[in-house]
Amino acid sequence: MPPHDHTSTPQNLHPQFPAPSPRIPALQQATGKASAAFVRMLHIESMSGIVLLIAAAIALIWANSSWADSYFATWHAPLALTLGPWNWSMDLHFFVNDVLMTIFFLVVGMEIRREMVNGALSDVRQAMLPIIAALGGVVVPALIYVAFTHSDPLLLNGWAIPTATDIAFAVGVLALLGKSIPGPLRIFLLALAIIDDIVAVLIIAFFYSGGLDYSGFGIALVGLALVLLLNRMGVASAWAYVVPGAILWLGLLKTGAHPTLAGVVLGLMTPVVMRPAPQHYLDVAQQALQRIRTHAHQGQFDIDVLQHQLRIAGAAQRDLLPPVFRLPALLHPWVAFGVMPIFALANAGVQFDGIDLSATGPQTAALGVLVALVLGKPIGVFLATVLAVRTGVSALPAGVTWHGVALVGVLAGIGFTMAIFVAGLAFTDPALLGAAKLGILGASATAAVVGLAYGFAVRHKLSR
Image (cartoon, rainbow, N blue to C red; front, side, top):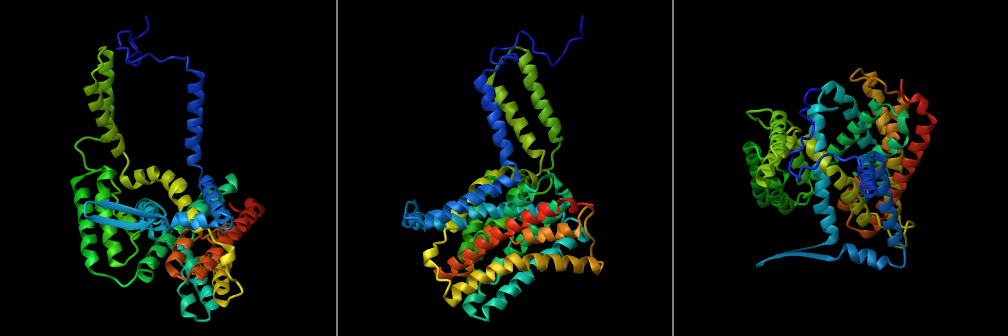
């Protein structure tokens, strides 16, 4: 007689615990395969870039079609929140740029925090190369743009537009080059783009926030205090932080700082270690599942017992990963396939008829942004990297060649999301804003095409 298999399904199980069946309905199998394929698609880096590109193309076509009026009317449609005597109104464009994009910046903040603790920025010497490269990719494009403006104070306000890099687009284009891309090169691009985001956040905070109303800092401090209190209490549910986060957002809005910075602050405050517990979460989860198995083997089906044990197992499973690793994975599909495409749809609709590139101001804004991104980014990144390596401050990562550094520099010229975001803060004049967006779109498309062409041409030289 074979030994008893404790994992087998006994005959006295309650009917609610059916035995495994090899006869799975064809429709169920097809649905399962489709669902698995959809989940895999959400984690393909190039897919988010493609969706972003489609959203931008739709916005451009819509804004220049016979339905152009509906495009602008849609994004300026009023939204109102009324609660008793309180009433708060805004338009849809504000909701997208200042509310939804806070989620984008939350993910950015958590990615920065994660890299600082357990990634490319955790070791000072290892982090020096992408830091120096990113600073070169910020300074050179800014100087090129400033040179185009001839000290016109109105145009000078857009100096930071070509300093930004779109992580999703740049990494997505890199992914299109396939398996010829060495892992260290991808990490170098990610680290550079993250540092680029840090610089962009600092620029927004210091240069594109209005005159500060210090009364708002009191509200923001209340939100921060509540976040710290919840962290200290060991509250792990992300939903519990929505109200403190909203208070922080409202406080920053009242101060005159850009409210999306609340997302970055919350991201940087996200815990990077598991909550202290008297028993390891893995053991807690295993014991809860074992109690469910025992319950099933006894032929019982008590819904209260099962729900209680499943809650224990679910909470332990959640806590096995610190929030700074768990939350970005949960939010990434929503940001990559929701927030960012909606942002592109709301902001990339440049009406060509409304831009007079023969006028000095719009022409300078468009050309300055275009040249600064397409040429300034790769020149700045490459020269700064050469300087860091030749002076001995840092060394090229193992497996990364100078051809790879040049490719990263070219792809860093894809500004798109962050550049459009900064442009909206820099220019209030619709003509200048439209021209700047046109320059961003042209530069991002050029950088993507040139990066792909160069990558395929030198793909056998990208690794060593």
